[in-house]
Structures are given as structure tokens and as C-alpha cells.
Amino acid sequence: MTADLLLGAVVLVASCVQWLTGMGFALVAVPALVVLLGPGEGVALVNCAAGVISAVGLAAGWRRVRPGATLPLCVAAVCTVPAGTWLTRQLPEAGLMLVMGGLVTVAVLLVMRGARVPALRGTSGAVAAGAVGGFMNSAAGVGGPPVSLYAVNAGWSVRDFVPNALFYGVVVNVFSVAANGVPRLGRPQWAVLAVALAVGALAGRGLAGRIPEQRVRSFVLLLALAGGLGAVGKGVWTYWGGLR
Image (cartoon, rainbow, N blue to C red; front, side, top):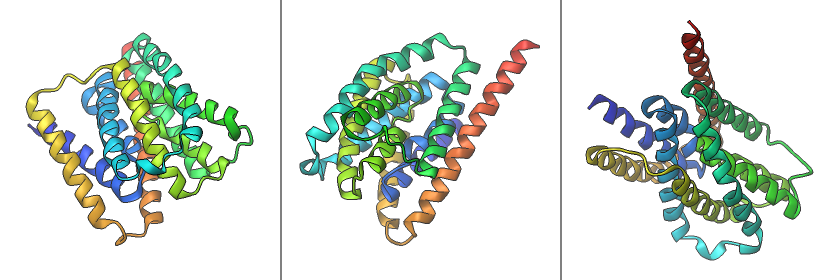
């Protein structure tokens, strides 16, 4: 029961953050869910939940999607999703924790820095960002940061970024769920998660505008960075324990 409540609390907070700032669900949820459920189940759950959130968000803004801009991102991501799934199935748990924690940590640091990379422009930049994002999404549940970096380097406005990122999120998570499978949870856990997603969405929308967005985004990134480093630490600890 306690584990189910913790699971619900993590998803509720991550959902609230997503609706409050337009980002952060996977960055907040992945490190905690990986610890609670294990690497495979944790990533699979994030893929499912992120796909649902993206679909719900897209319902109101699908007319602003630019197929020409998002197609290279999506096609490249679909091509690399199987590679991420394959890699995670080859690694022991300690290795998975290290990979996931490392990917989250690197992603957060890049987003915090707002890296300007000339290569992440044009069609080739979209293909590169989509390919890395697809791999990271299926391997660690965090496929958004490469797309965010592409948007920064391509000069997208927030109005352009949000619907196109949501469309990308739907596509990459559908294929990630197909590759990773659906997490093996009981009906009570699914019910808790559904309620947590809904309550988090309501809370996020209610708080939007009352809290400075930049402050929240900074807090989210610091929280995600701590979680990523924590996952790396657990991976090292597990590996070290296996050597004894």
C-alpha cells in the first residue's frame, strides 16, 4: 500500500509539473519510478503516462502542428527506438541504472545550459535530434531534451514548440510502448496512477500563473538533476555490491 501511494505521489507531482510548465514529466518521474519499480517497468510506465499526457495536450492544439517540421524528428525517432530497447535488455540492473541516471543527468545539464549547437539546425539537425530522442526515450524514458535543444537552435517560438513537441511525444511514446511493452501493474495501481495523472493536471492548471514559471522550471531541473545523480549513485552501489 505504501509503495502504491509513493507511486501515485511521484506521478501526481510529475503531472502537475508538466501542466504547470509544459515540461518535466519524464525528468521528474524517471529517477523515482526506476527506483520504485526497477529500470524496465519504470521506463515503460513513463512511456505510457507521457504518451497519454501528450495526447491530451495535443487535443487542444493539433491545428498548430507543422508536419513538415516534425516529420524528420518523428521518423528518425521511430528508427532508433528499437536500439534503445535492445541496449537496455542487454545490460544488468546496475548498468541500466547507470545508463538511465547518466542520460537524465546529461539531458538536464544540456537543457540548463541551453546549448547552442550549429549542427542542430535544418533537416539534418532535426534527424539528429529525433534519432537521439528516440533512443533516449525507449532506453531511459527521457526523449524530450534533444527535441528541446533542436527547437532552441532552430529558433522555434514557444507557440511553435508546444504543439509540435506534443505531437512528437505521442509518436515516440507509442513506438516506445510497442517496443518496451506495458508495465505489469495490478488494477489498484493503475487506478492510483489514473487518479494521480488527473489530480496533477488539475493542480498544475490551477497553479499556472500564480507561481513564476522560470522559478518552477529551475526547481524542476534541479530536482531532475538530483534524481539522475541519485540513480547513478544507486547503479554504482549495486555494481559495487555485486563485486563483493
